Each structure stands twice: as structure tokens, then as C-alpha cells.
Length: 387
Image (cartoon, rainbow, N blue to C red; front, side):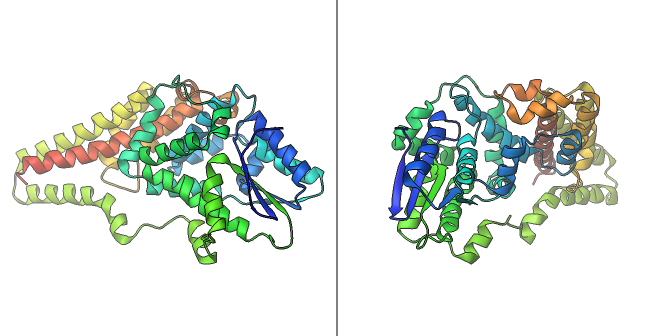
């Protein structure tokens, strides 16, 4: 008998916990559909992830350029980072992430059963996670790309058999990044429970296939009837809009710098104006270039980052990384194979060897460096005027 945790919430509702990279979980899904004989199979997939799994969707040059232009590089990197971490566990199992979810749908179709996709759209989840992460959390996530990719982790079988170990790993994610942990774990537990509660549980027998990490949280909501109502579900399924104050924050530094410049011009302090210009330009250029260097950008991309940052930092609607990433894309243009393999990278180090991955790294790390440079410069200018 395949080993995979499951719980019966009611006589007509069973939750099956799986590992998204486990051969054992694939077999467990088939076994549960055969023995439990559900009327409906609900799976932890959204429509876009399901389409990606069934159509072998890949990145293309137009899509990569759009990601750079629209500032979505960090989201794609975050998604790829999570997939790479899952894939590291899946290599020994011979499965790609989400294999057992796809099998659940395929088995449902083969047995003439209904199936339901109950997860929140992946782009909504990633956007909510990115927005909820504090600046230092984003730095830690991106910096983790530089970490030791050979660090040993628990085997998939251990995760499925030892729920305490799995719980501790989930809590570790929340400690590492509280914002991302809340969105990726707690919010999705709630959202999944809400979707399950909407199924005809009183009339039909339902088998729910979810990642083992969500098993306890979803069960808790359903057994205590704390799943969200329709209004709460709508809120969970949307990307929060920033308030007026939050929207004004990116403009604080440009307003400060322009105001300081106007003050020096009005008072004829040419020396102070030159010093201010030097501090602002040097800090922005150095930090943006450093980010691009860490991403191993092309020399021309590094120069572009250094030249663009002092200007783009004064205009929050622009970003130095967009320009550096575009130059990197044009000079070191990814091949069709690079683009095809990007979302299948098997190690974190491959982000640098893959040309598509490097474009995204150049874009993200240049923006990160430019942001740090702007704040450093602003702090330096405040110190110079004795505030």
C-alpha cells in the first residue's frame, strides 16, 4: 500500500496529503481513487498551473522581454526558486513538481469522474507574497540564490511520514519570511478550505489531493467551520492595492533630493550642489553596478546600470534594472534551448549559467542595488546638511 497521509473529515470528504515531487504520491493518488471511489476529485491546482502541466508551456523571447519591461522579474525568479527547491527533492524520485496533481485529474477523467481545480491562481499568490514581504525579506529571498545549493535536506519519504518534521519546515519558512509564509501557507490553507466547502459535500463523495504541508491547516478550517465566506474569498483572490501613503513612499527620496537642489540653487551654494550631485550619482551608480556584477551581467549591462540608476532613482515609474536587463537580453540573447530549459532548472547555480535566468537576475539585483543606493545617498545627504 502506498504511503501518503490522509484524513477523513466526514463520511463524504477525504483529504490526501502528497509531496509534489514523489513517485509514492503518484501511486497513492491512483490507489485512493480506486479504493475510496469518489464522485469528485479536487486538486491543489489553478487553471494556469494545470495548463502549464498539460501543455508543457515554456518561456519565449517575447515573454521574457515582457517580464523585464513590466517589472515582473522578481516574481518569476521567486516562482523558479520555489520550483527548483522542489525539483531538488524530486530528482531522486523521478518526478517533476505537480506530477501527482496531474495524475489525479487524468485518473478522474479516465474513470468518468468530475474534477475541480481548487487552488488560487499562482500569479495572484506570488504577487500577494511579494507585496507582503518586507524589504529585508526580499533581500534574503534573492540572496538565497547565492547560498549553498548542496545543503542536505530531508528525504521526501521523511516529509510524508513525519508530520512534525513537515510542520517544523513550514514554521521555518514563516520565520525566514513571515510575509511569504503567511501567503504561501496560511492564506492558501484558508482559500483551499473555502473552495472545498463550496463543493456538494452532502450529496457527493469528494477526494481532495493537496500538498501534505496544507493537510493540517485545511483540516483545521473544515472541522472547526472557519473557512472564509464569499467576501473573504474575494479578498484572498485579489492583489491588495497600496494606500495613498504607501504609494507616496517611493517619491519621498526624489522630492527630498529635488528640494535640496532647489535650496542650494536659491542660496547660490554651488559647492554644496556639486557635493550633493557627486554623492547622489556615486552612491546610485556603485550600488546598482554592484547588483549587476553579482548577477554576472555583461560589462555593457553593468555600465548601463551605473548610468541609469542616478536618473531612474529620481523617477519611481522607471527602474535601472529594466534598462540593464534589456541590454543583457540583447547582448547575451537566450537561445531557444535556454528559454525552454529555464523553468526546468535543476540547481540554483544554473540561474547564472542559463542566459534567460541571468537576464532576470540582472534585472532584479540591479533594481535592488539601485534602491539601496538611493537610500544610502539620501542618508549621506542628510548627514552632510546636519539633519
